[in-house]
Amino acid sequence: MSERTVFHYQDNVLSCEDVRLDELASTYGTPLFVTSKRSLVESCREFESAFVSLPHFTCYSVKANYNLTVIRNFAEMGYGCDVNSGGELFRALKAGVPAEKIIFAGVGKRADEIAYALDVGVLMLKVESLAEIEAIDRIAGELGVMAPVALRINPNVTAETHPYITTGDSKEKFGIDEAGLEEAFSLLHRLKHVRLVALDMHIGSQIFDPEYYVAATTVLLDIFETAKSMGFAIDFLDIGGGFPVTYDARKPATPIAHFAEKLVPLLAPTGVKVIFEPGRFLVANASVLLTRILYKKRNHTGKRFFIVDAGMTELIRPALYQSHHEVLAVTRHESTVVADVVGPICESSDFFARQRTIDDAGEGELLAVMSSGAYAAVMGSNYNGRLRPAELMVDGKDVLVIRRRETYEQLIANEVL
Ligand code: LLP
Image (cartoon, rainbow, N blue to C red; front, side):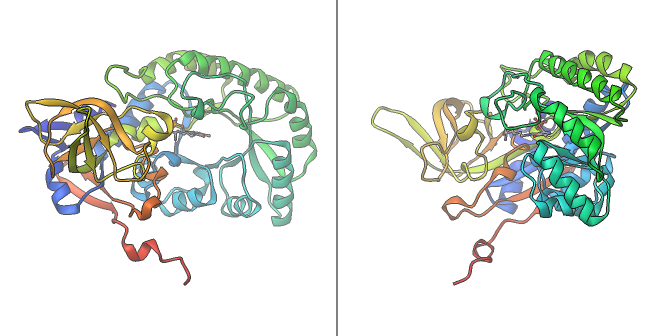
């Protein structure tokens, strides 16, 4: 999904679908997340048309953007959800996702979270360690239920991406690697309250080369054969998420169809339903973070700064992963300057762009930090006493407040003096 089709200049003003972003900022204030509903729908269509020939079930990975309205949009399109905590499970259920369409993942689930998932009846819980299989069996036994589980394998494939978001390498904490498989299968045979329903993998995020998926899927299929020969009836093969999006026009993401071209011939012959867990692919380019320029300054070397009212508390990706986000002036200017775009937080890592050529917008004008739909608001914090911003959803000419701006009172609501 190209964000340029939903975020576009009209009369020199950046708009989302049919709504001008400057008008949204005047009405709702900044910092402000603005999400295009059409972008969500089109990303779904693009994903589904790539994999149309493969029997599959798509579970939106809610960690990318867990706003209730965003989750509900995907639920309305028939998607299930991948959740990573009791809190995300609660959100998915509140958004209207049926429990039987929810996969509960996570390398460190607490007993109360496991009990919650079993109690509501999720589609499956992923298991990531031998100790966790035993814990789930014990809790299921206490509740008098059978726990459907997916074995998350660690295929030992190191996908090329930022080191903080590669997960399929056996030196990382995720999944069970080759060394633990025999014991995992033997436990799953022996224990009375767990039933193995799926094999699962997730090798990382923002992965550009489909060959990493091919390598990991080949390992998964080998294990699938072993499991079958041991008498396990596997209902699903879960390939995880990780499909890439374009953040930087100079580095366009591999189209999703290229992943499908490689994966469908590998997976279709199994006759087993495939699960995908895309997060970023569905939401990253659906939102922008709108921010106002508070001050401009120049230091003694002539270096320029645009100091804006959003920061790493709203979008930590540049600080954490050195990730590139385009920054556009909401009102176009003829002249450009080279500047750092920085926030108000007391950290040097609080920047959106460094030495970037951008339109020479003035103080009081607006900038849009692009591709802010995934891992932005959800990774936000109250550091420096910051209030979480409002979030809007635009649908054609219509504007919906999907999260109200936090207040000072809410900031201290749980504290006891
Ligand atoms: N499934 C599992 C088990 C996952 O751990 C993840 C993401 C996904 C699916 C969805 O991956 P996606 O399709 O969004 O790549 N905060 C980082 C990304 C962390 C991804 C964590 N796991 C970032 O901002 O780049």
